[in-house]
Amino acid sequence: MNKILTFLFCISFCLFIGITQSFAQNDSLIYTERYGVSFGVDLFKLTRTVVDDNYTGFEINGDYRFTDEIYLAAEIGNDQFTFDENNLVVDSDGIYIKLGANYNFYKNWIGMQNQIYGGFRIGISSYSQTLKEFNFYTTDNTFVPETQIVNREFNNLSAVWTEFQFGFKVELFKNIYAGAHVQIKFLVSETELQNFDNIFIPGFNITNDFSSIGAGWGYSISYLIPFKTKRKTQSTNPN
Image 1 (tube, helix red, strand yellow):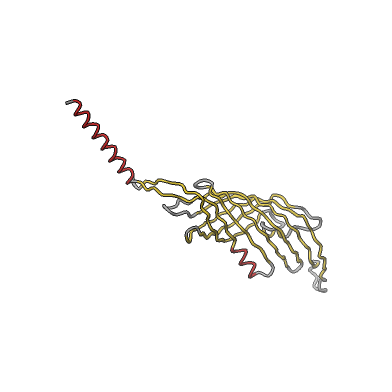
Image 2: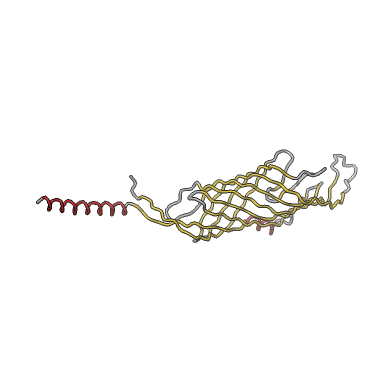
């Protein structure tokens, strides 16, 4: 009799465990997330190249999903800009690279991989400037200032800055993303010129005499190349 009771207890216990596991599985969803590298282009720079006669440039950007929230990121590009004001005309031309990471604050729904992020970059630029012409500034309107044609080149210039980015990326179609961001930059160092200033630093933007802070923004289109997936489980039990 004891053997029969023991046998029935074992059968009941196994059935209980099986039913419990079945309910646990029904209370959770198993899904996969894509991990890979994305590459894109800055559409703002391409658009500005078309509509602004004083500017030509491009930027290629990319990121790699390192963890669930952290994306290693980089940008590389070229800027050619003519600063043309009443008293000064300067050409700037150079390349730049920015390296850093983004942190995704957005908690996606299952199956989504959108981003609302904050990021940090270290930027390095190598460039040249050409002082084309200038006028001596005067408040005396008796004589028209004479334009001085100079065409003096300043080569082998460099600059370093830190940059904070805030933006978003949205998946339009599978693996195709559109995004936009703003940039706040702090100039760390630059090649100092004798009797002249760096007017425009590629990757940093126009400088000023009042502070080392710069700003910028952009919007881009990118494509994700997934090379692995990660299985995840999410509970569907509201309790």
